[in-house]
Length: 277
Image 1 (tube, helix red, strand yellow):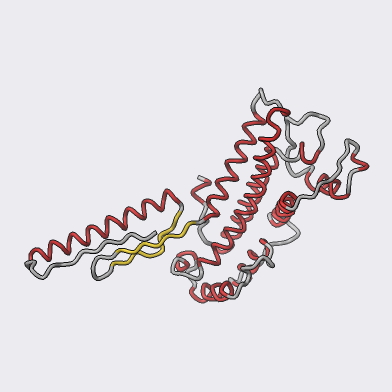
Image 2: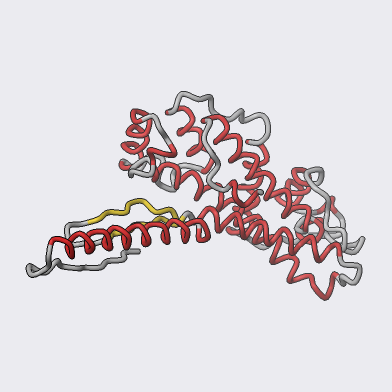
């Protein structure tokens, strides 16, 4: 966003008038600057530069962190799922589509939050705002050079690889791939991929004749969270019992725990902390 104003001091002004004009210019600049900073606190957009030119030209640049919006969506969808399951009047057959939509959306947006967060972290290293996120100029410049060369910018790098590369470049150990929070995030991303790249599967009330993919989903997720408590007893595990409030809340908790571990390791403030208060 750019806000610009232009005032010229006329040659005929007296010295006293010029002094008043200069003070008025400064007041206008401070007012605009304060307004933008206040706006950023409500919108999640961060002002990058505020400059004052010779003729009172004010230029304000802002960056929107989409990760904040993604996490807000995850929280909303998880709450909607929980409200449906906690309602004594919930009729599974009446609200099945609505609840399924919330649960699926929570999983997809949780993965989107993780990727947006690490992309924003790298991107910040390429501009002045990186000075606040990464005080160490040497490390900041290193990340900026990698990012400008597409490392790990392209889709050939997984979400977890992007986090591990940042940690290693900054002298920190990568995530332990055999423990949480890595294991849960890997599972979440796999579930996201299953939902996005969906291929129809024939399922049966008899689990013995289900496909390998369905059996694998049951084995990997049955102990991860509470099943959909309004699903009828005869409902299939996937998707009816699996995709509910328990799954949505697990997705939210998993990505927050993972992102927390990343920023704590670097001893940096979490950019999404305002959403968790």
